[in-house]
Image 1 (tube, rainbow, N blue to C red):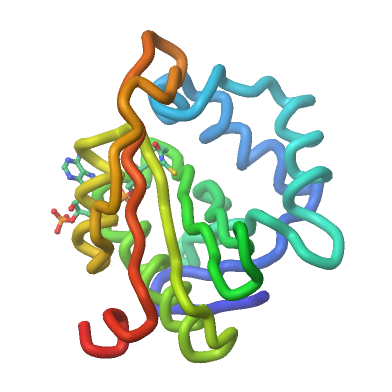
Image 2 (spheres, protein in one colour):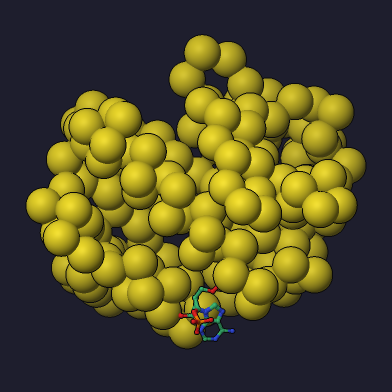
Length: 171
Ligand SMILES: CC(C)(COP(=O)(O)OP(=O)(O)OC[C@H]1O[C@@H](n2cnc3c(N)ncnc32)[C@H](O)[C@@H]1OP(=O)(O)O)[C@@H](O)C(=O)NCCC(=O)NCCS
């Protein structure tokens, strides 16, 4: 998958991206709602395991202006080939510039129009940033798993959102 938007590129990761990606994955604030921050070796292993090969689960998110790897997007089948999960981990420096929204709009479009997906879902325990992003994308909050996620702190609720093809087309 290779997608270009006005300000972004979404492309396959390579091990050469590790140092830049680590700025996001190694940052405790960025990883606050995900898991313990990665060291550089864990970032390389993550790229090899999830970002490379025939069917990657995650892709590099590049800011075109600076040609920097800001982080990654998650985009892969879950439960059925026609249902994909969407996710994001973006370095702090790039927050609140509309990048996650811009990348997601392109991925929803690609998913529903090119891959002919039935549904795209996302989950988070961050009820402020990520849940608001999901709602802005037209996703519906379908359920809350109570105290089902640990992040790096105490147990917290996990929010599950989704958007159907027919909802997207009319959104
Ligand atoms: C969640 C995350 C991906 C948002 O990325 P971003 O590029 O800053 O988001 P955008 O600038 O595209 O914002 C899109 C919408 O998200 C919501 N949002 C993002 N940051 C927010 C904040 N600090 N407070 C409230 N809403 C916020 C808003 O609805 C925003 O729309 P608006 O600007 O019109 O209000 C980013 O904060 C991140 O990488 N967090 C760490 C990793 C993580 O927890 N990922 C989520 C689980 S997969």
